Length: 259
Image (cartoon, rainbow, N blue to C red; front, side):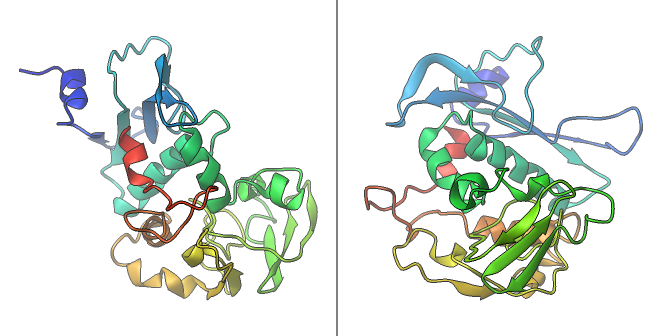
């Protein structure tokens, strides 16, 4: 008989999925919460430090979690399907890798440009990512436009402008490379992106359209599911072609989920 933390620490449990009906008004849960050990620049654990906000939000202060390895608790709404669940998991990855408080500096360093969370440093914009685009209102579907395959215009309702020589790289959970706004899966635009050649040293880009993820519409049809499948397939994994800052082969990102 093992306690949950014992099962996690022994590698018998990797994730905890809570399955329920979140569309009933009196039931709710966070998409995904995660407590994760903190690591230094050399991927060595920092003794005694655990990040309780490594998921899409933070555990409550009264939540006592004595585990010594990563604890990921995800909510699966039984009124929805795998696409919505994948999107929830994606937000957890965005937090673990993209947050300035990321507990894994190695992952953070390379995930931020991969997911275009560096618009401020790369293009001098007054925000980090396109998540600044509105979720409602007249600008929702037209926050972004593409005058050419290598440029983007933006109008967030607060900020507006044009970025020439634009590379969306691999986008993020809500924004495919050619998105016009939040959850922008139906964009008619073609853009050039380096996603398929991320950090391989070639600088090569390919033409990207929404047809790239269209084949997954039946596999994960709800929420941004088709896009999530394509996105996950382009995350650096085993034997990827990417290189780190020292020119060495990029480590697979998948083990970082369960460090």
